[in-house]
Length: 323
Image (cartoon, rainbow, N blue to C red; front, side, top):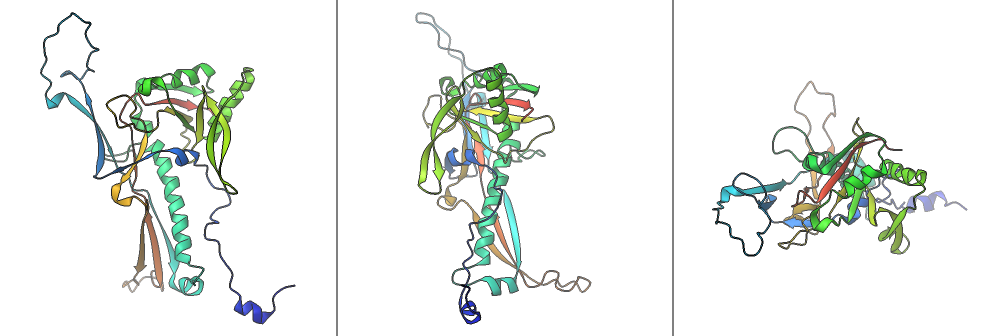
C-alpha cells in the first residue's frame, strides 16, 4: 500500500550519500599502503657515497688496513620526495542547495564524499604515472624506479621475467612484501601459471567485508607475496607495468626503507582539505545571463606523495600485454 498524498508531503526521503558509483575502481593497494606523516614540505633520505658518487665499499677483512678518506657533506647523495595535490571540484546551484539540504540530506556532503573518492583515484593514478614536465613536478614510480630495477617485456611476459623482476628487489634482505598491478596484469600471470601447469600460490590477508567489517581472504601471490590491485593506474600504449616492492619503513639504520605514502602532519585525522566556495555573479555584461550566478563550489584537495628510501626497494616488470 502506497502512502497517501498527505503522508507523502510529510515524508522525507533519506538519500544515502555514500552510494556514489555503480562501477567503482579497485584500489586494493590503497587499503594496505602505509602512511608517514611529515612535518615539513618533503621527506628526504640521505645515502652515503664516496666522493666519486660510488657506493661505499664493503668492510675490509680483519687484519687489513685502509687509509681514512675524508667524507665531506658533498659526498652525500640525497633522495628527496615532495608532495603532490590531487584536486577536484563540484559546483551546484544555490537553488539546489535550498531544495535538497535538510537535517538528513545535504547536497554539499554528497559532493564532498564524491570528491574525496575522485581525489583518491587521481592520487593512486599519479602514484605510478606521476606528472611529467618541469623539475619539481610530482614523480611517480614510472620515473623513480631505476633502469637496473626494471625488466622490460614489450608483449606477453614469461614466468621467468616475473621471477627476474621479483628477485630484483634487494632491500629488506630481498624480501618484498607487496605486488601492485592492474587486474589485467594479474589475469595474465594466472593464465601463464595455468598454461605451465603450475599451482597458483595464495597468501592469506585481511580484507574489508561490508557484513562483518573484515575477514581473512586468500589472494593470488608470487612466492607468497600478495598481489594488490590498483586499477587507477594508467595503461601506457606500450603495455601495463607491475611493481614488486618492500612496503613500509622500519625507521632503523638497517635495510627496510620501502614505499610509503607521505602526507602533511597537519592533515592527520582528516586527509582531505575541503573548501566550500561561493561563486559570485559575473560583472561582464556580455556574459550569458546566470553564467556564474547562484552557484556554490565544493573543492577538495588531497595533499599526498610517495617516498621510498632505498633504490632497491621497488622493481618493475614493464610493458606487458594484459588479458
